[in-house]
Amino acid sequence: MDTLILGLPVAYYIAMVAKVLVAFVFVLLTVAYATYAERKIIGHMQVRLGPMRTGWHGLLQPIADGVKLFFKEEIVPSQASKFAFLIAPLVALIPAFISFAVIPFGDTVTIGGYTVPLQIAAYYDQAGKQVFDVNVGVLYILAMASLGVYGIVLAGWASNSKYSLLGGLRSAAQMISYELAAGLAIISVFMLSESLSLHKIVADQAGGAWYAFKQPLAFVIFFICSLAEINRTPFDLPEAETELVSGFCTEYSSMKYAMFFMAEYANMITVCAVTTTLFLGGWHGPAFLPGWFWFIAKVYFLIFLCMWIRATYPRYRYDQLMRLGWKVFLPLTLVNVMATGLWVMFISK
Image 1 (cartoon, rainbow, N blue to C red):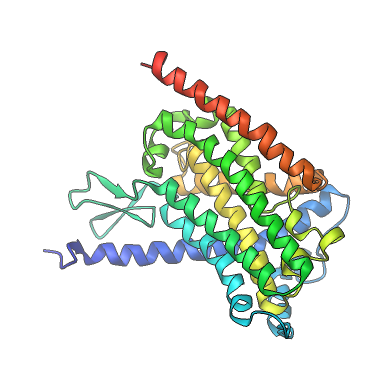
Image 2 (image 1 turned 180 degrees about the vertical axis):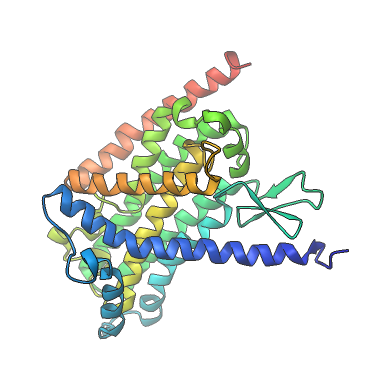
């Protein structure tokens, strides 16, 4: 009989540690090489080569960048609020990583007779018949996404620089504006699935019944609003170098500077994973390849789409950014929620 710790077998804890390590390494490696991929993709789209000199076709460029930043001088402004200045990069980075705790990135694997769901915050009962996960997983992700803005605002305020402060305030206004539209966009998914559990939402999309087909407007608005929330081009106003030098991170250097951009790419990966889970069927795909392969393929396709958008569209003006969020996306999502409610009440029953 298996040894139990707090009512759960030891195999559960071993599997949990293994899943955490796999997810962390996956996100970390993707963050490192997303920077390289973006420079190469945008370079070729703009008839350039991108990184070429560090390793074969520049493959060692992320390692070279990391080593360079690690050995650069750490500078802390004399009039900065020291503790807040030092902790801000962590506040921006950590929520992006821990959001992966509730995202299902595959079906199940069997280890030592124990069924392990490929989702960190989930487990099967000992009979292997029912999965238990965070039944409000989407709310958890929205909460973590809301925490990320504190790192940017804190960095802008703690730097004691007017440029940095303006960048932080811009970010707060931008994220609040687009968080409303993004949240309303995915309400239609909850209405159809009748659950906030990401495991159930993915299960409901089996067989190609993706919510991107049932809710195309919500899918497009959520993805665009997510780009605005993570400050990706064409919504990268908090660090608009033409107006604010480098925005909220003007006074940062060395690895603290690097952590903000690690947070941006980690947030991009998280957004693409959430979009895949909510709208693109999660890990479901043709059965000749494992589910985790289809999940990663969909996430990487969306990451490529983010890079393609960056290579194509110029930066918005700030008034255009706010107008799009409040006067276009917010009314559209409200109309979509009402239409979905009417469809659920009168047609789908």
